[in-house]
Image (cartoon, rainbow, N blue to C red; front, top):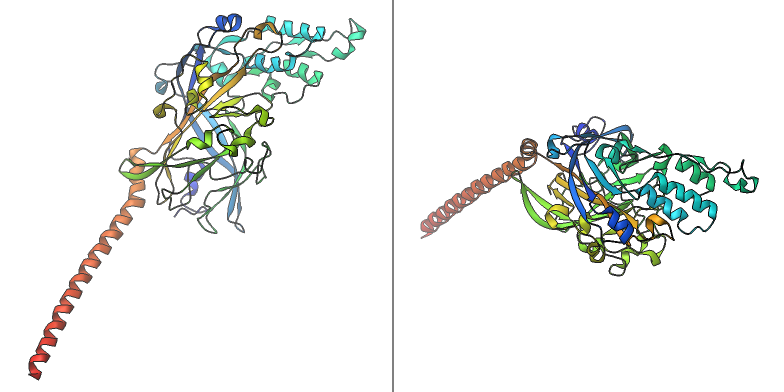
Length: 466
């Protein structure tokens, strides 16, 4: 029943998930921006959320490979704001947050002593602030416009011909300067935190259909034509393992290690069994991320290959530097509120309260089929803040991994669909077990009756001999 093909009953739900998926976004509103910027104060953050978006996923361009039992596809993601599920919050709310563009630019200009480049920076500071307030809609998906500049002094002063082309958008100016690895989001001259996510896809996947066996069912064999990644410093960290988390091969046990590949994190993760639960009457296993998977390299050497650019720049537990795969942007992913993460970074901030119920990633899986009944993937986006040279906006700031937002991407098979699953999965086993029980009972009666009959016949033969 689970095997995937052009005519299978599972194809429709494979192309488009039959359960609603939601992305709940919690933004961190900065309440003391001036104290942070001018006096190095500890950031005081107020979590605002959830801003809830309905997430529609739809696979397209399916290409079947019957020789190796595979199918390739792309998947489109579209997000629609759901005000009712946002508890009165609106996309027109204003949020004060750190300016990621300033952080990116500071890494370019922070150590420069060239007076021309210092002039360029001073103009940037006049047009932008380290902490800015924008409406949620612009912050997340729509984007807000960035200023344009003219730093081309070559016509005025020929000796400054190296500034030729230094005009236009920030991206165009950095490109003319020859800066490598410029974040792609600057190309549109807009800034938004979820750049490129809405109405887009994250590449081409090739997965197993079960046609040649269910042991690797829906395992990701390739992503964008490659069997491995190329971001990290070892074969281990570059492995593409597992599924997308929605389905696993049947016969999941408590000893099974569930592996997930997520392109947003540029790595594979794994979850282990925590406990049994009941999901609308269906028995399921809850799998969560073990502590060692998130530990820093000095605690778990397996994670040393995630240190970027080398092992002299390792982050603390629960954090991952995404610069190798985040379009050149210096972004740090972590667990929400640094849950099970770096206590040193947590102590540098006010307003975070990590706890298991709110901030833990988990999957609830029906063990017979491997179907995920409930899932919550929780990730926090941060940027590194520290003094960069003598840049005025950064001169007095504290050194801290600065939280911007965290996301709870979740899905839950509702009671109605759970009943259908129960009919299709649990009841047949109940019926089979009941029939087997009845047959065993009948068989036992027949055996007893046969034994009694045999005993009587044997006794009668004995009496006749006497």
